[in-house]
Image (tube, rainbow, N blue to C red):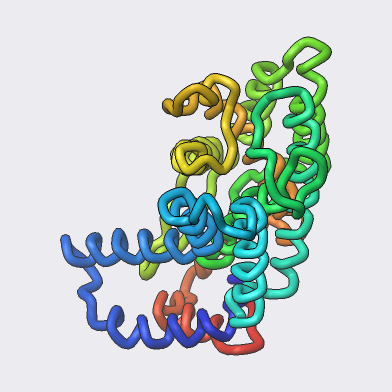
Length: 308
């Protein structure tokens, strides 16, 4: 299991004092697993949730006549959130490097997409590169933050994970298609089929509290893409950016964008996989060897200095 931050170790220790009293079976056990799953997902989304909250607050309460442009305020707020995440040990230096990489990859895409008119931002503020306010890169960083945090919070393991060099080629093709489809044939459906073929046999194993669960990795991609699409609807409603058909009045982002977010997940997974090598599921204990109790094993692996 990958290492928790010191703050997370403290939270986990206190949570175990309460959760260890929960029954090991029955409806209450299943309810406990469900609640812990939701709390861990919320914790993994903390950067994105904080950024989304700032976007909504700026839409509802930021004064139109403020001396600081709203886009500049959003950029400064995003920087503060990122600094606090690292300073309070909610993120590790290793994770921060991945998040910066997401930021750079996303900003390059933003510069191109706004130039070709795929979407647009309000033309205000000075903290920007061309037509792209700098806070936009943090929205991609939020996806990166979620990916690296969920990796260790749920102790993700992968059965039959494809070779990383193959996934890197597919991710590069996906990223290139986001640019080239404006000039050449759009290959997204071919790429989508390639993703299903390559990742179709892969099963994700994850631990919530006491129990371990399995899920087809392609289904996990789809679920995360769905939640990003929901967040995108909230962000466009807040006016963070607008698609051309939203300029004259907001309405829901087209469900077709789910395909784009699904393919973006492939890029995200490949970037994270180069930092956290995908590990296979743990082998069960051999004949005659008693398995370590879940809680005892989890506590042993979660001691400071150990890998979770």
